[in-house]
Length: 525
Image 1 (tube, rainbow, N blue to C red):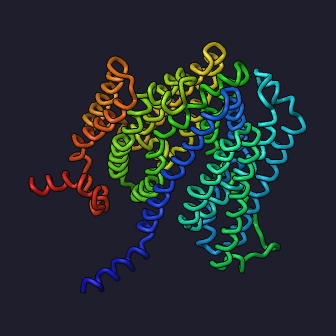
Image 2: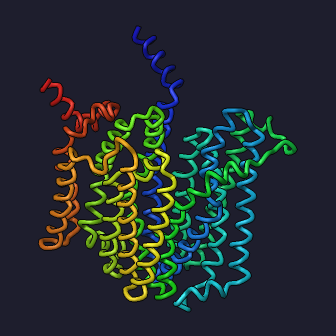
Image 3: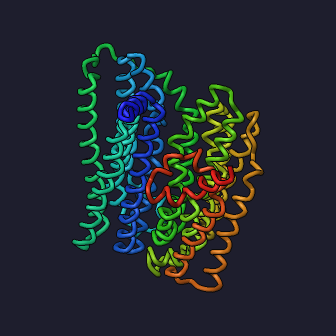
């Protein structure tokens, strides 16, 4: 009987798309931690090996690539994940292949404009660089990353549309980061320059894309997609897709402004060393987004299903329970990057970047502030408040640009950090205020106030201990872990682990740690 029940359970799991999505998202979550760790190791090795001028030139070139890459596809990646599954489900292969060709054509057109413009008119870039000693050749090489990254994004979107999390896991989280680590290790081993790093970076990414193209063709052949390919019947749903993607490009605009424009302005008003001082701490600050990015894989479809039922109370409950979980799980990273910013910066990047700790301190607070308030932006999109999202996106981008133009010329990297942090916080507050547009949604759920007070007390306490008593990272780091465990122990009964993540209790060690809350509940009952 037990064997039959187990087979029935397995069959049910295979037929349940929600369970399939959860398992796929769990695999991608594990992959995200692996790739983030590998990329972080690469960044530390690059920082330690290159001079501040070379590292500034390297990160400036990457910021320029990110700026152009953000606009190179005109937001069409969203169109792929939105429409390709629909076309596949409806057997509209003429539109499916038409969408792929349309995106490829857009990438090719934008690549010619961007790469050709940089190479034929390099003086346009040199006018934007204050430090004349900065090697322009780094930019000339890395600009080829724009089409490579755009094609890579297209391939990932296609694999996501065809529900292939294992292939995404292998390419995005294993193969790509490992190739980059190999390039960095060669850089250090041969003790060579930033130009070698630039060429190696292009080669590694191009090789990964070529392998990914082969994987896609093989998958489409195995699933019988290529049998439906007919070049003469291809239809490009231009109006349908662009009407969906163009309004949401404002989200890309905000990301471009907040993660690239500040760097470009630093390069215009200051030297490469100032760019390095700002960019060096960004990967550490971005660690505060890991949990939020992972939870976002499941949040949107769940919220969309509740919205389809007009269950606004359910969306509100989902929203705040998710926000609290993200706040608790992100706290250890926040404690290190905010409360212990100074000793952590010296440990990771060396004494020459010690002054950057204040920048890490501010940006970590801004990123964690986003996690604390939850998925307000995603919720607004699920609720259909697109017009409001577009307006506040423009407002946030304009705020960041104005603050950058005021602060960067005078304060350099510090001004960039202040401007970006303030703009992020303002943007998040505006998104939070927008929740009032939907009935049943609350700007703040007061029953969770105790959670946030405990978190605030832990963060402030750690900072004061580090600032006044000891600056040793070897003392502060275990203390931060201890405070994180205490916060979790105090709040775990209210986190409702047994109902929210029952499968966690089945993991041997983790189940023993988390099981206290459920055991206490059963005893109380």
